[in-house]
Image (cartoon, rainbow, N blue to C red; front, side, top):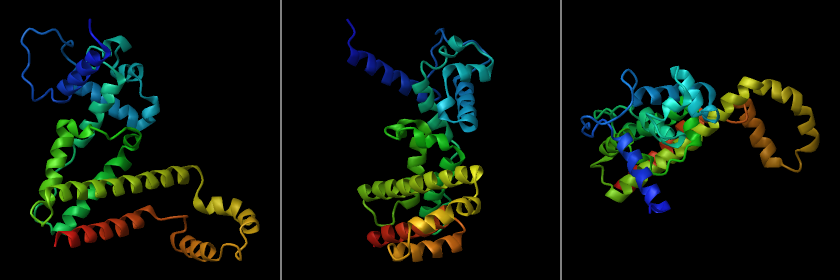
Length: 251
């Protein structure tokens, strides 16, 4: 009698087979989806829906509607919403291209982080998906290979190369989260409008004498950025600082 562990193993194997479907040999005579629609089509529809409406609106029924199918028909191609999301994450990474080898190593590393940030800003729903084990997909694995290639031979150990990529990815991810939040807030109410409404109250409850440094620095920041923060500028400064630190460790 199959156990829960057996079911989970089978699900994991099935997911890997779907992820690597283009690398696996086809099975002649095997039963499968009707001609005219592919797993790739389902994944593309899921990405389009998540980009437009957010991951919260992603359901098998909604994706089926995008494709003009009945909800149950979709399970012929993808067994679950969870599986579909994993396939979507990997498909997004497939758009990644090699970092130009002719760039100086510092620029290659900055490019690596910039691409991660750009991908997240273009597909904000990725921030709501656990990154754990996502690298097991072919596109994510290909990206990892390219990232390693970009920094191979600069004096870092294998472990240090992996950590460098992880640190740059984590920084880019955190900054992308802030940039997306800022864009969404600005779409609802501009920073100038927000301060016009709330500034007088804050002046009453936050007397300068109680928060001298925060008041001084906050005023400088607000006047310079015309906003509470500058995600783009913070990224440029932060990624350059991180890269310089990593390169110093490589020497």
